Structures are given as C-alpha cells and as structure tokens.
Amino acid sequence: MIQRAEARELNRLYKELEELYHEIGLKIGLSDSAFSILYAVAVLGDGCRQSEICQEVWVSKQTINSSVRNLEKKGILYLKQGEGREKKLFLTEKGQKFAEEKIYPVIELENDIFSEMEETERVDYIRLSKKYLEYFRRREKKLVEEIL
Image (cartoon, rainbow, N blue to C red; front, side, top):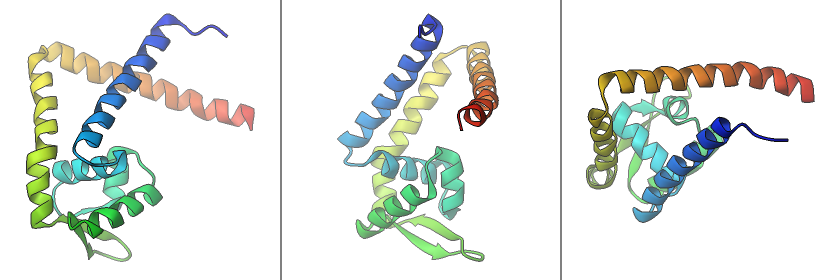
C-alpha cells in the first residue's frame, strides 16, 4: 500500500517531535512517563489528580500509577488522599526544585516557540491539529469495528 506523502510527512514530524521530548527526558534522567507526569503536575499544579494527568498526557492509568510510585521512591512527589479513591499528587521540596530546574525550562521553550509564530499560525496550527485528530478518531472507531 502506498502512503500519501502528506500523511507520511505528518507521521514523521510527529515521531521526530516525540523523539525530541524523549531525548530531553533521558538527558534529565526521566522515563517518558515520569517526564509526562512531572510536566503535567507543573502545568496543572500541585494537588492535581492522577486521572487529570491521564487526560492531560494520554498515558494509561497503570503506567501513571507505576511511574508515580517510582517518583515517590525518589522523593520527587507524594500522594495525598482526595475524595473517594482519588489521590492527589504534590511535589516535594526536592521535586519542586527539580521541576524548576528541568521541567519549567521545557514549558518556557514551548511558550517561546509559540511566541515566535504569528498569531494566525498558532491558531491555524491548533485548529488543523484538532481537525485532523477529530477525523482520525472518527475513522479509527469505524476501522476497529471493521477489523474486529
């Protein structure tokens, strides 16, 4: 089967960007999931729930739970009981320092990059990404039904 050049390029760019985040994580000593968790806590704030992190970074609950346990062991974050079975995540003092030194600069880099783009480019980029995702999600459901 031949893949359209545009789809191939989009996939390549997505994978390249994913690899850049992976490399950042490796260089600061974090797995992909640990990086995603600390990034999400930095964005969502202390006291966010594990379920919120799952929604923010699109990683399974099992992976999040396992990585949270590892980050707890390293003294980076701790859990506090929330409502019901939900647990809230908080950065320790060590975790806050780590986030300030290693995670916040990544967020700042992203913000700087978006600031360099024209407002219309930012809006178009987000709008078109959402549109592609919407089409993909709709067709993915149909495809799964057909092949099962």
